[in-house]
Every structure is written in structure tokens, then in C-alpha cells.
Length: 214
Image (cartoon, rainbow, N blue to C red; front, side, top):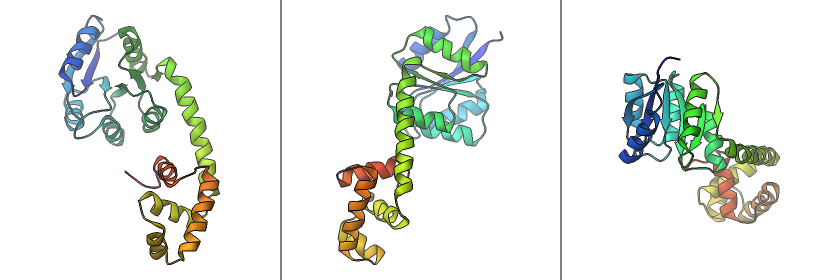
């Protein structure tokens, strides 16, 4: 096997150096560069052309998810492994949907990380085994949310969006040119259809389903 060129994008220099020291114990892996934020990462990937990028999610200026999306939009050839503390299904699903080749937690051992690097380098995807049930659960939840979303009428979606943006019933009524009573009826129907009990939960549903952006 030829040398695997790896780049590490993480905003903590001690983390970067620690990962490099672990990886370079492997004769087939060479760490060719570092980045401390998303913008630097995009520039360095273009310059250094690594085979594999280890990409943290929590970074300044442009986070790892945004950086991943930009790399995929640019059709970069680099294989991306998200190396992060986040084990929540929402993060894993978003990264997988955008197109990361691997997802590994920072508290995993070095053998797990090396296995992920070899796997994605050879053209396959790698998800840390104990994250598989979390992703599956989130996928099932998303399917349920999609079904709930399909039950909403166009007007109910309009009301939900405005509710999620923080508007009061009177403001929603004015904006949509309907009565406040009608707004209350719509909100009641929305709550039943998406199985929530208050405005905050409804707003979270709207954000998760990309009806509004944070």
C-alpha cells in the first residue's frame, strides 16, 4: 500500500499534535498538514491534496459540518472522517447526508481511528460500530417526522414557520391576513399532527425539518 496522506482539522493544537503522534506510529500513514478552522481547512486541502481529512465539528469561523458541505460542493476528492465529541443522532445523520466517508468519536482508541482511515482510503465508508444504533434510531425518527410533515396543510406550514420564528398569534394573524381565532385553530391542529404540546417543541420540529434556519 502507498503512503496515506492525512490532514487534521481541529482548533486545538494539542489535539492535532496528539493525533499526529499516534498516527505516525503507523508506517503507512503520513500527516501532511493541519488546520485550525474551516476556512484554513478548505485552503490547505486544496494546497496539500491529502487522501484523508480528519475533520472536527466544533471549529471557529466555519464549523466542520459547513466545511464538509463546502468540500462536497467543490467535488473535492479528499475522503472525510468526522472526528468529534458529538455522538448525537442529529449530527451523525447530517454528516452522513452531506456525504462524509467516516464518523469516529474522539474518545475512541487509536486502532479504531486507523481502521477508519484505512477503510475510507480504500473507498468504503466507516461508522464507529456503537454509533450505528444511534443513527438507525434517528433515521426512524426522521421517517416519522416526514410522515407528520406530510399531514400538514400549506396554511399550517405557514403558521408553523411564523410560530417558529417567534411571532405571537396576533402577529401571525396580521401577517397571514386571517383572524386570531383561526390562528389558534391552526396551531391546535399542528400540535396534534406533529405530536407536540407547546410552541417550543413545535419550533424545534420546524428547525429539524428545515422549515426555518437558526
